[in-house]
Length: 179
Image (cartoon, rainbow, N blue to C red; front, side, top):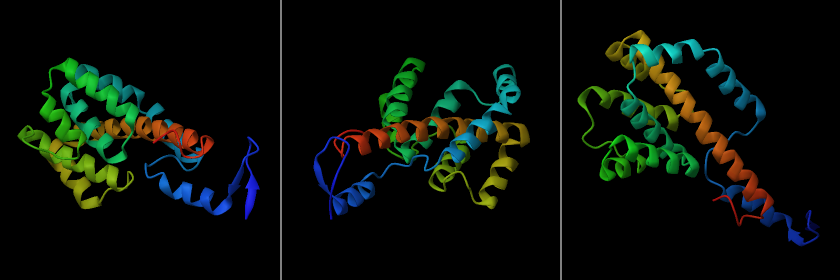
């Protein structure tokens, strides 16, 4: 079936349907899931501030977690920003490439469990296996494990927001932009 789009061009509907299938990044499919992530973070602002003073999650460790989640979600904006930030923090290029490539190579021994959990958490769309979550809580303690999950939720919000923007560009441009 042929239809006209916003700009008046004729387009085949089946091609429009296949375009939707070509966008492979994870994004917010509805505003409610975006609002749930915002609400989650807004209610935890005091805990985020306490982390700054208590050092439950160091900035370097936080950056590694963010790159591990970004590797799964594939947000190009977060990829660029966290690469730049990691280079400013003194990370080696090989470590950045490995983390953003989805590989956890030679991590700090105390960070290995959290980095693997972060990848699993992102792959499962923020619904991790309860056994792995319990393992995280046992290894890091309640406060530090909760802070790790807050960090993961922060980067999820950034990743999926960036990807949602790309999806909008993709749809408006007929598949030319936003990949």
